Structure formats: C-alpha cells, structure tokens
Length: 531
Image 1 (cartoon, helix red, strand yellow):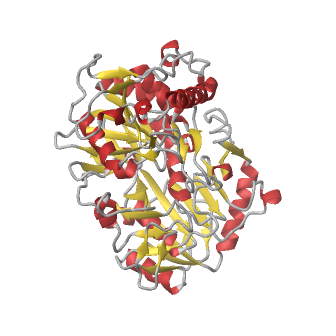
Image 2: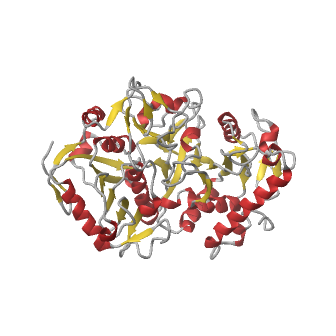
Image 3: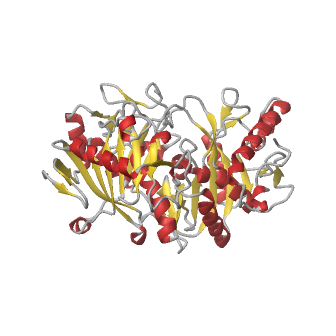
C-alpha cells in the first residue's frame, strides 16, 4: 500500500492499493457493502444506474493524431482537448485522499503487439474486473513495468454537462495524444474493456498492420481456427465455448501479418441471463471464486437466480481464462479456415445458416446487422434493427472500409469459408416466432466446421430469393424445414413482406459506404428488387 503513485504527467496522492489479489478485492468490496459472495464463491455486485454501455456518451479527443484518421460521426463523437485536460484535473482532484485500486496489466497475448495498461479504479470490484479481463504480468514484468496507457475509472464522479462538455453526467473519453481514457459517472465495467478495444482498433492497423476484430475464436483438434463475429447477445461467448474445441477468447482478437489470431484479453465477459448448466456448462462452471457477477439477483443464502431480469437482461459475469478447462495456451491460433458472422435477427427473415461469397462476406461485414437485445445498451427496452459496421461500429475509430479491406485480404490469402448464422427467430418475428434452439445452431456450426456442406449445387444449397445467400438444404441433427426461414412461417405473404422490409433497411444503411465501394461488393447485398 502506497500513499503516492507517480504517472508520466501527474501524481496521485491517495491511498494506493496496488496489484491486490482477487480475494483481497472481494473482501474489500464486501467490507464496503458493495457486494456479496455467492454460493459458488463468485462475487456479485450491482452497477447502479447504468447496466449497459452508453454509446452516446463515448468520445474521442479530436487532435493532431485523430483529426484525419478517425471516421467522425455518431459512433466517434469529437471532444475538445482543453475540456479533456480540465476534466482530467477534476478527476485527479476527486481522487485525492481516497482509497484507489491500481492494476498494471497487458492487452494482447503476443508481446510485439501488446499494450501495457495501468488501470486506476475508484471501486475494488472494478479492479477485480480489470484483473479478470486483462493479461496479468509476471513478477519480473512488474519490476520493469512501464504503462503505455492509463485508464482512470471513477464511477462516483459525475460530470457537469454544460461546464465539462459532456452530454450528461456519465462519460467515456479517449485521448490518443495523452494515451489516457477517462470513465466517470457509470459503474458499468464494460466501458473499461471497450475503451481499451477502441484504442487497439486504431493503434494496431496503423502501427502494426494488425486487423483488430470484435470476435471470439477457438481451435479444433486439427489445429485450425474458427472466428465468431457478432455483437452482444448474438452468441459469441456461448458458441465459441465448445467442449470439443479449445477456446482462444470470447470477444476481442487480432489477426497479424504472420496469419496468427491472438486474444486481446485475459478473460471472458459473458451474459448470464437465463444461464442454464445443461446448455452452457463451460460458462456455468467458470462462475466460481474470482469471478465477478454483475446485476444478478442473489438471495440471502447466496443462491443466484439467473432467470430474474428485474435489474436488466444484460446481467454479466467476468472470469479469467484459466476458469475454463478447454483453453488454448497461449491464447494464439493459426490456420483460420471458417468465419461465422452471428446475427440475432428479431424479424425471423434470415436463414439459420447460409454460406457467403467473398462479395457477400464484405457486404455483411461492413453492414454488421443484428437486432439490439433489451438491456445490452442503455435505453434499449425492445429489440430493434441495428447495423454496426464490422460487427463493432461503436469501437471502430476508422472508416469501416479500412477494416473490411484488411479482412478481405486475409480471407483471400487463407481461402476461408464465411458463414452467416442467424441465432435469432424462426417461424415469425419476435413475439410471434421462437428463438432458434441452441442445439440446432451448434449442430449447424459443427457441420460447417466438419465440412458437411462441401459442394455447391442445387442439390446441396438453395439460393435465398431476397438476400441471394446460399442456404444448405440438409444438416445433420437439424430439421430440414428449419433451414428455410420461409417454410417455418405460416404465411408466405407475411414472410416476404418482412424480408423485403429488412432488405430495404440493409440498402438504406449501406448508402453511406457506396462511394468508393466496388460494384462486386454492392452485388453482395440483397437482390436489387428487394426494397
């Protein structure tokens, strides 16, 4: 414990708790009345006002580094350098004399592409999250540790919007010139990891020629790697956690010039709403001592009710990768042969599985379609159609074409199969149809991984009349009619009406990318008449 900690451009005169163990952070949290231990040994906390990210309150400082590089807009909102400096000083003043929890760690499992982080947390359980989610340094690393970036995380500090230049009292602001992230007014821990992801998404392509990806990754017994792209709630963590394959990571990875896939993180951050031990044993068994549960209902005996969404549908758990039995060590894979784009289509239109041509892969990657699920983001209460470029638009500082071009080059060099997987609804839209059973989605993914869909002809595939994607006609372990979304609806007219409406949404969204986009990629979208 220290009373002072020096940084490159400031000093923190606080009671510093540096590099505490999981147990020490748990005890500190319970002592402060901020959490309770559950029956499994995991710590449960509530994040308060915010139970999801707040994209409208995430900013990038517009300066000499970012002005020309960043694709400014709704996802990348500019912030004044002078306002950042003023807010930074206020936060340092706010922390004076307080107990502060500091963790030195890394992002990136390959040393030459690694970022050294110093995470400063107001709350002990926020520091436990950082311990779980980033890569722990060795004792020798700590002796010579020098941070590249600093994250100041102060949930109790509320900005004054008019004075500080924010939209409201919560904020997440990134300065690439100061190499600092400021997070305040919200205790939702996802803001910490996504802030670091945003940093890597600019630094790695620019400085290392590495493609950063919002995806999960795992490796089969044949040493071939599969990638799972998708936004929150589409199944990245669940589907990449497979007892027959080794997990590299569940959310954020890089694809380097040596054709290696490497995890940015040291842990997993999984949704636990309706968690079932039988359906998701890998996640369920990882919730033990050291894990951090957020916004779940726990009774006086420490028993968690995972089906209770009275706080949010975005209840979460973070745990270190070593809580998983089927773990790839180190967190690096090679020989990528299959990529899955996951979407939770709330309108029941897209096939449960379809194979994409290279042009369709580029189109759907740049579109990043899904339906936002209630609770994933602040203010979302019902599923709504959403397009997030590169399946991670809110965290991608540069124009989506930069990342799409890098992905296309890697796909072509490695001869990768690309699949669109709908983990959403069949038999009708949300409220009418039902969500596709997990066992069927797993069966379809396993079939793709095992080469069951080889061959490309009328007998093996049906071309969707609106979206033009190739639907397999048969799949082991899956009813034939489920593979055709139209056949699961009771009314063809209603199905095509919904399909045309969704196709129109695709085309309207893609207009912002059309300038400079090849005709081939444009043909990768829905059929021209489908709007």
